[in-house]
Image (cartoon, rainbow, N blue to C red; front, side, top):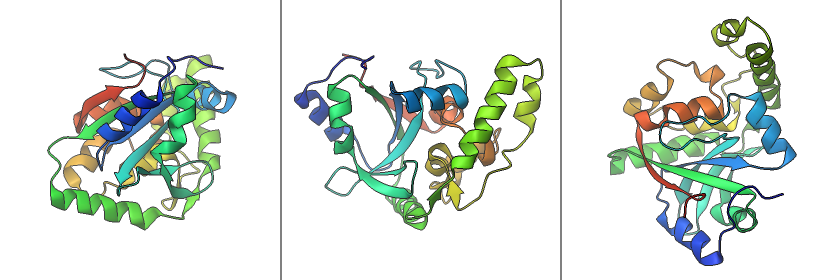
Length: 211
C-alpha cells in the first residue's frame, strides 16, 4: 500500500546525504502497525511547519555508514538509513527531518554518549497499550482531560519507546532536553507529542513527501 510519492534512488541518496549527526527523523507510515500506532498515540496531522500523523522517530548518528539509533519494537539499537530505501521508493514511508539548533561539538559528543547508554536495552510494548487507552479516553469520552493528567503507569527508565528514547538521549544537554519536556512528562511522550515540541530546539530540514 502506498500513500506518499515514490522516490527514486537518487532522491533517497540525496536525502540520506543531507542528514547530519544529531538529526531527528519522524516517520509516517501506511501499514497496519503504523496506522495503529498513529491512532493509538495521539491526534492526526500534528506539527507547526509540516502536518503529519507520525508513528515513529529516530536519531541520525552517521559514523560514515548512515547509522541511526531507534527503538524498533524489539531492542534499542543501531540501524541504517538504508533500511528505509525500499519503503521510500514504494511510497510506504514519509520522513520528516529536524536538526538541533546551534549544536556544538561538545554537545554532539554528549548526545552520542547518551545514545551509547541505551544501546541494547528493551523496548517497552506495554507503554503503547497504555498510550492507546489514553487515546481512546480522549477520543471517545468526555473525560479526555483526565488522560493528560495521568502518567503512563508502564513507563520504565531503562525500557522505553521511540519518542521517549529520542528525547532521553539528550538528557546531558539541558537546553534541549528541558525544552522538550518542560510541559510534558517523559512518561507520556508519544511520537506526536515530541513532534509538536521539536521546533523548540530544532530547525526543519526536509520532508520526503515534498518534491
